[in-house]
Length: 201
Ligand code: NI
Image (cartoon, rainbow, N blue to C red; front, side):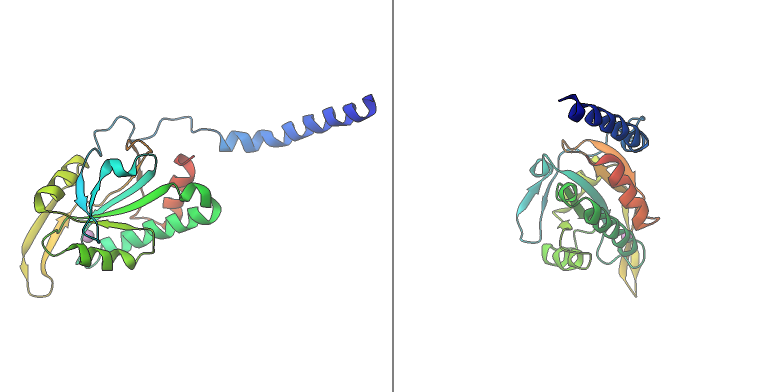
């Protein structure tokens, strides 16, 4: 009888020993989320490409990646969104079940030109999972304010019509809408994927 039990114990010890370094690196982060307790996020009511009202609380239970920009942005938004969505795709490759619980969201700061249709066309450039949101100027103002996002319409320009100066931040938000961390959308897809690996469980 004991012949079977003994090797099992030995095996268990070996497994426990081998698991130690792995457990140490995969453990819950020792430090709290960098944005924990920050007054970022909160309610909004916006409009999706189908023209339907979408509220912040509709994403309850899901992690959210949030980026503010605008479809006519010539050089910053498209690169940031590309890195954000490539990072998300990398994370989805290694953690498909967890990635399914993360919703990437683009919110325009140019509601005048970014109609629901336009936003829908724009986000389709970055993959199937990115939701694009617009709204009335008041709705967009409210959402931007809640996320501490600054934006300001520039003077009319012969090439672009006008530019919109805006802050450049990708937010990772938790299942209850709480802020977790900034996503390095200005750096690399790998950096974005690493943040998702770190905080999405
Ligand atoms: Ni931009």
